[in-house]
Length: 61
Image (cartoon, rainbow, N blue to C red; front, side, top):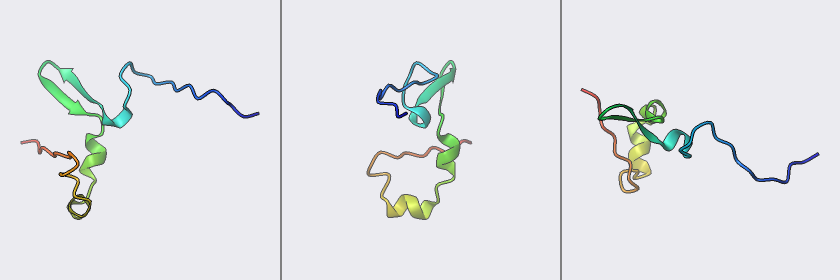
């Protein structure tokens, strides 16, 4: 039996999965994808010109 209903369920109110930035303490925001993005190799970031597409990496002090 195949499901024909395309309904999507998410555990959180805000959709977007790993692409969502949330405030975890007042004035402190973090992307839930921060770990995954940290694994991107600089060579790939440059080759795909991700900065032109809006990727902005901020290093923690």
